[in-house]
Length: 154
Image 1 (cartoon, rainbow, N blue to C red):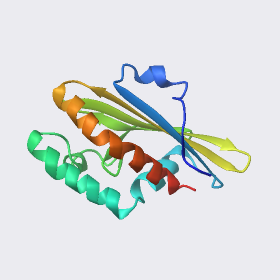
Image 2: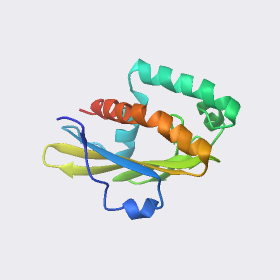
Image 3: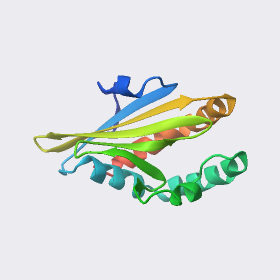
Image 4: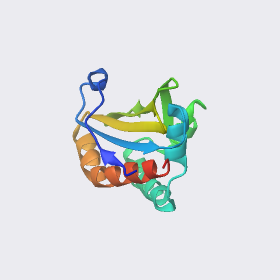
């Protein structure tokens, strides 16, 4: 099954207001919960995604933005550099608030006849020019990273 871009989930109003949002969906023959889907997609990505995140951290650290080093000092309740905000079997919400923007990654799972349908939705609320510039810069990479990460689930 291909990763497809899809409409926002019915819970999108829970994350309003947002400056940017998108949703991708994939089906897998595995039976997994939301946390398993998030861990599999976020922690097992291709090497180039990790390299891109290292470059991002080098660029944004002097600007005072959060990096994976800053998040590693946060509670252990995280997947990679993304703190867990809420976690149930059918949905996990990851993300944090920063001075330039707030973001959430929402992974929803739906059990289907032959496995699991997984939706990954990203919500971003920018706060200032730095947030808008950052979002503009990463947006082309974002879609590629999400699609590549979801392919790990198939």
